[in-house]
Amino acid sequence: MKETYCEWCGSVLLENGRCPIEDCVQNVILDALADAEGEHTTEDTKDTKDETSTNA
Image 1 (spheres, rainbow, N blue to C red):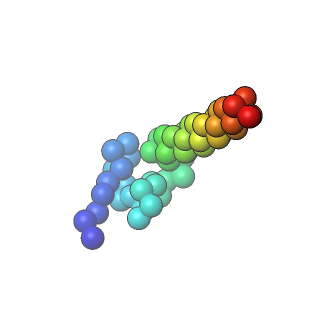
Image 2 (cartoon, helix red, strand yellow; image 1 turned 90 degrees about the vertical axis):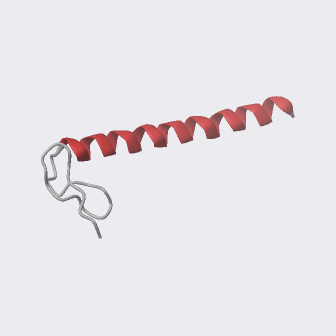
Image 3 (spheres, rainbow, N blue to C red; image 1 turned 135 degrees about the vertical axis):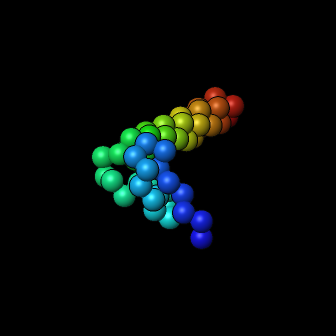
């Protein structure tokens, strides 16, 4: 497996793409993206429910 390095601190990234340094910017960015994706998915589900209730 080819080692991938963190662009912020230079550490070898873990298999899941996270940096082993807990407070590294890489991990903060990944967490923010995951939170935003979760919010986006929740909004899509809510919009779908609203559309089905208004069409009934």
